Length: 328
Figure 1: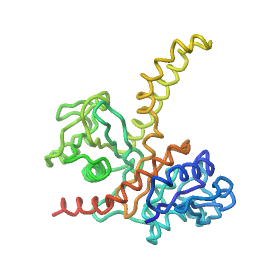
Figure 2: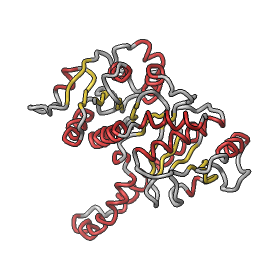
Figure 3: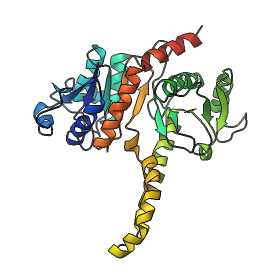
Figure 4: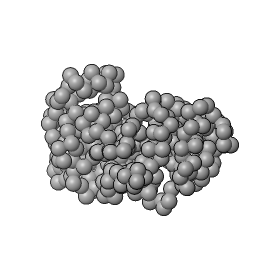
């Protein structure tokens, strides 16, 4: 088994990507292949290099601000395109990238295609809450969808929560402006009626309740989901920045606040996207873990561990089976 890493994608590539792979190497029983410029990657590899870390050459890089489809067509030998092709050719089981999210999604879709029965891929983003966390999808892959596609998202999300998070019989909620049946616009009402045909559906959930109510999977279209994701990231960063600003600057005063560090440590961990590694792109005949563009080594390490868990538990096959079973 092999995990392909787009070593040139991300704000801090290739250094942080390579360091993350090195940190993950003792914890990963698969081969880790760093895809990109061998000279640039080699500058950050230790000597001796871990035996399960290798380099696969690629001569081009897709920038964070490039238009996804144009970049994919023009840069056939980009680190992202080459990593995607390794999965397509069966030389890798998953791809990890902190590069251009749109390009990673588009390259994966064009190369691997959808699982039969799935019409739109979805990014499943992990969120913390008071009951062990949940995943929200779609968080950015498919902004223009039909209500029927949210049912597909539900099947994909349930497979992920079951296989990767280890929860039995995961429940699904629909993100809406109210918890009562009949709330929302025409799209939400139709999605509710379709989801309600399944016994794992638990109804609507409001944005304010996401972090307090028990939930496993929350579905919505990518336009709404991406706004929720980025708003939550902003609020989390604001909270941590506000706490830091309140700590007095003097050395003696800081000592008085030292006991609070232990109390705040769990909060910091829950709000840190690096703890989750990345978000899987679900619904395709291959696995892509999309990391934050600002990912440092810690996030890349955790993304590799997430990819390993998904591969070891046959996530892609499980999604295919669940959709095929539902279509009977």
